[in-house]
Image (tube, rainbow, N blue to C red; front, side, top):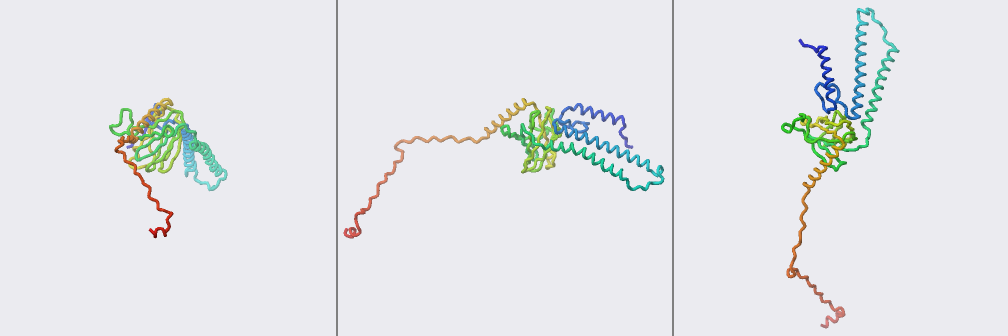
Length: 312
């Protein structure tokens, strides 16, 4: 016989989940026993989180109301309690109420939802731009506003994993951004459609070949945040993790300087060698070719007439 979860065990499970969530702090990944979303670290995700909580309260209240109403109707209008059924088919007041209340609920939901939608899609003044290109099956990051350097980001597998790395989430090169900075993210695909998504940021934007999509975020907490490709892109779809390091502005400036230096060194190393200038050898005067002397052609005597020529 199947044993159901006892109330005490269920309560203990809820408390453990709440404790795990409290201990997780602002870690940018899902935790065991976690309930709900990851802790928000951007203004957009904070508003998404608040909107989700509002909807949760509304749908819970509706579900409880409908359940109680059904129980009441089943008891009040059962055959035993109501042997002679009512023949009323219409009730104008009741019909107005059950039409107006759902409309009011939808308006309550629509106003903050539309406000949030426009907030997410608004054009911000970017302080940093990162171009993200999806490949099968890795990511490429470019920093066009800071020297134009770029790098690939591959998943770490097998022996590449080090202590502290997370299987299926750690990468060899992480995207790095400064804290409290408006970051514009440009996404595109090089082969098929991918999707760049980081749950803690509230960001999910498709990377479509031949098209440049745009989104933004502003991380308010320092830490490491994880995401994954959220669009089926082939056999390696599950092996395209995303790792974003949010650091202080001082640390970002130092990281940026190192990357620019590495990019400059790599560019110089890959540059083709210039041919050495050829110095012409000195020639002796005897070896120099003599200039050709052109003798003038004898001019015909124009004073002679044809008759003179015949006399000669």
